[in-house]
Length: 482
Image 1 (tube, one colour):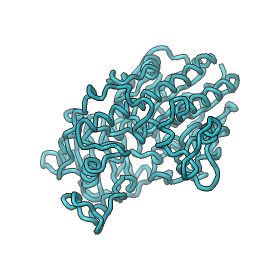
Image 2 (image 1 turned 180 degrees about the vertical axis):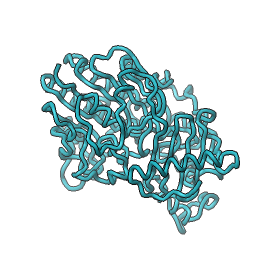
Image 3 (image 1 turned 30 degrees about the vertical axis):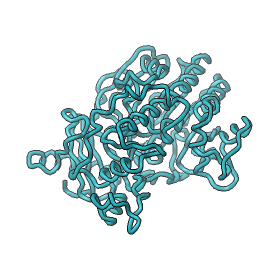
Image 4 (image 1 turned 60 degrees about the vertical axis):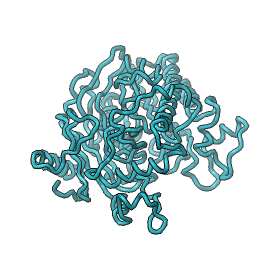
């Protein structure tokens, strides 16, 4: 048999609990739900940092964001940082990256990807335009005032001209064109990332959508200032042009988000069907995941940029060549392990510099992942708080929560988190805004146990594990005693 192909599909901002494999049978996701019945489902998967650029840098390099330098959105990945295609040393692979990049130049092939299909123009300057832009021009559309098709404009187009359909068509073309040669293909959908609307907004009945169990667990005085500010900001200003004042508003947002998940599912199905039609199911490692989750109403928050479970956990489905039966891997794992796992499954050598470890044995057999703990980081900025007016222009409601100085400190705060297999979770903050949860008893993170005499020993133990992890991986952010 020839060297296995790799088809790596990832979405943007898709929460782990959007699939039937993770308990959600309400969202219409027939293709991914069917795919999960013939693959290995990893139960408890954590990102390295819950924001796009930082997480993507880890997914491609096998390094934590503090090591890649991509600690905030739009930080370019340095040329000397090898991505997975550059680590493949055997097999003569054709390589392609289709979709959102968010690690620098969106338009030019780089980091070992020979074929490049771009969909984003919002990060570009000058006259260069994406492949998707040219696709829309050929379809007869006119760009807006800035000379590009903004995300809001693209989201309002008929489904056949939207980004998911475009990517599915391009990915299918690539697969058909490389059926006789080993390939590595990354397909990166923007959806269900904001803007939270699209052609499937009415697919799910918003009146019957349940709100999260922790919807009313509002961040209180014992929670980080940033979290409380975000909750109030959404209540006063909404998000993506949608109001978020009432339960009906939140149900509308969730219904739209579910519609985007269903939209992506349809076009992921097109790609998977093409793979099967080309007779490549038995020759391809297929991965489906996302770069981070979305709060989607939990604690009356949306988007990411916080350390709650809804933002830091993602789905991860992995199908081996020829796999027919479902398997599950239990216990916490990190996306930092994806690069070594994939290289291992493809029969490639694992570079010494990788900061994760291969999960290939667990993926092949199912059962416990064998990890005692995973570590997550937050490196300041990208919280949305930097857009809140300060000084004389500051809204009155802000004065009840924080001063301008406190807001500035909260925006810059860098957090280190540990999640252990026994359910303990500690968010450690240089500002001293620590959070301690026991997830087995409190999966919705509604009771911050930090600061009680009873839980001081476990907080210190977890903090010491964080510092030990920092020492091993060259993370120099100073964390105080919790």
